[in-house]
Image (cartoon, rainbow, N blue to C red):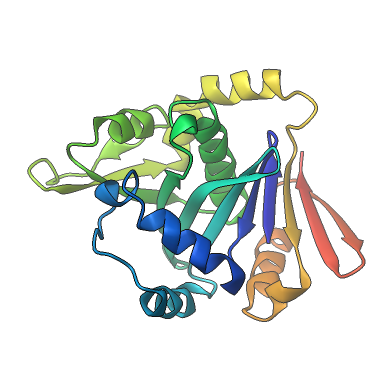
Length: 225
């Protein structure tokens, strides 16, 4: 599965991506900001991949201008309550303070709320990571009750808060990328193996959100104008 908008492409990870992800996660500029900070072995990484390769977890490699630049995830999805937990890291230190993380977050938030029909999503942030906290707040995240003294603080975002708080970010991105503002989801043949194709098809076909559908070769393309 791929998500596309604003020149960003999020490709759901496959087994062929996990060694690159392991190298990123063990790097000195990413590891200190993760909730899990121990060294990750190839065996640990493979075990982890098999545990998340299902319809309750969506991990994406971030592509921008033909380069793989990081990871964004929407994990532990509860399909009854329509809630999830999100996280992101940028592998290229030179891009961390750029506009690209904003674009990536806009794509993922819109996909989570409009394609997957989510109601709320959560993020856990180390309390000393003020940059990540301020970034999250710009999208409408607020600290959950009782989290003030915790090391890993939980922040929550509802669809309503996202639409209200991030409206100016969406307007700015739409203006800059005015020829690439249609959110597109592409389902590929391997998405049938783990149930992702059937899941997305069922959600989208029964959703009131306007969309267009196109089948090309072995792919299903949904566009959300």
